[in-house]
Length: 302
Image (cartoon, rainbow, N blue to C red; front, side):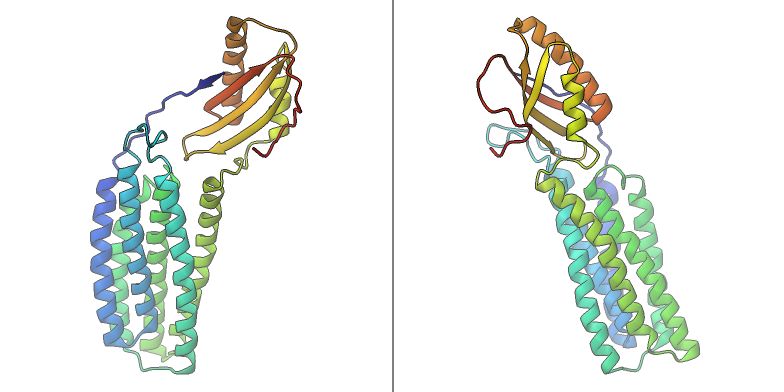
């Protein structure tokens, strides 16, 4: 049995921009709650609720980013490498929950409209655009590093778009008297949150459930390994994604002859190289076998 585990250093300082974004969003949330109550705008209060969910999600992301750096131990052999995936799952879930709340609130406002001060809505929406825009810029370069940072970035980006929608609504109310824009824009914000949130929720859930990464064709992988000289078959395969930088494979590899350990290591080295280059698998554990009389299905429920 052997395993391959190359260490890649991807260590950007994510914590500082997260802290700045948390501070900015606390400021926005407080201001928009005051502005929403003062102006009577549900869209502005909806944006404040979304911003509050941003504060919570950013705190979760910050904690996860810190935990992910903790080293492995006897009791935690993987360390906290999955903390950021868990944070992405929590954050994407909150996007969907907030969207459902917004739809209910928009429905009640539609049935029972209230007078709205459009100009106040405009000013507070502008504050939201500026502060969220700054947060988006702070997190942009980190957004492709992992799902955790992407979920935080998406929260802020959608909130900036929501503030733009609120601004448009405030202008329509102030100059055209279109009070119906307020609940309509609230629903539009909610639909967009669901669209974004469900995608991230699905991706993070697949990682947490140890599903095989979508880009890996297991049949093609088996054929690739079996094409090596001396290999009879590959079976009892498990492939999962630990986090966004590590894809693991463990399997039994059956040989045609009783090869020495040195020959196995030579074959293993070539197999590891091919699997990393073609399938992106960078942590490989193979159990060598010869003449073992047992079922050899490719996939087995252990």
